[in-house]
Each structure stands twice: as C-alpha cells, then as structure tokens.
Image (cartoon, one colour):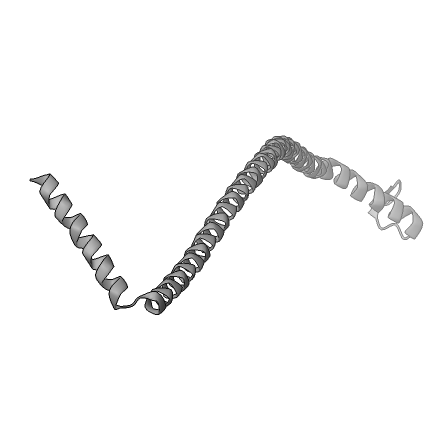
Length: 173
C-alpha cells in the first residue's frame, strides 16, 4: 500500500516494493511478538539445560560417592581376603603338623604292637618247643624206666619211699 499525492489511498501493483513492505511488517511483528515467545523459549530451554546440568552434577557426585564407597569396600574385602588366606596357611600348617605328629605316634604304636606280637609269638614258640622237649624227655625217661625197672627194683624203691615217709611222720609228731 502506498499513498498517492493526488489520488489518496490505492493499490501498489509493484510486486518488489510491496514484498519488501510486507516483509518489513511481518519481520517487525515477528520481532515485536516473537521476542517474548522466543525469550520464553530460550529461558525455558536455559532452565531445562541448567536443571539437566545440575542433575548430571548430582549424579556425578553420587557416582563418585558410590565409587569411593565401592573402592573402600574393595580394599576392606582385599584386606579380609589376605587375612583369611594367612589364617588358612597357618591352619594348614598346624593341621599338617598335627597330622604328622599323629602319624608318627601311630607308627610308634604300630611298631610297639608289632614288637609285642613278635615277642608273644617267640614266647609261644619257645613254650611249644619246651613242652615238646619235656614231653620227649619224659617219654624217654619212662621208656628207660620201663626197660630197667623190674620187680626187685620196684620193691626196693617202694621200700625206700615208705621208710622216708615214716621218718617224716615220726619227726612231725
């Protein structure tokens, strides 16, 4: 639109001139009204970004605290594992020492038991040999006596034994 000096209001048919005017009006309206809308959008976006940054910062602090706690727990677990390992080695050493001592005691006891069994078997064998020798000697003595013993010798031995018994009976009274 333009104002003509002679005619008053009219329509401007020059496209280039009217587009510039229309664009200027549109840009002016956009700047006037868009400034507040754009400012609100920018402010809202700024607040969202700040809030996200604060949340990220809080999460970072929380993650650092959790990491520190986990690191401390790991160190404590590592120390505890080392203590358990040392206790296991000590217990293993003590157990092997105890087992070795028990094995030595068992060996001593078995040796003693074996020696006792051997002595018992030796004594048993010696007794059997003695019994056989005694039986053999008695058998030979009985055989010799039976060969040498006759009626007159038997009467003589019986008489001597009766005299000895009589003497003992008399001395006791």
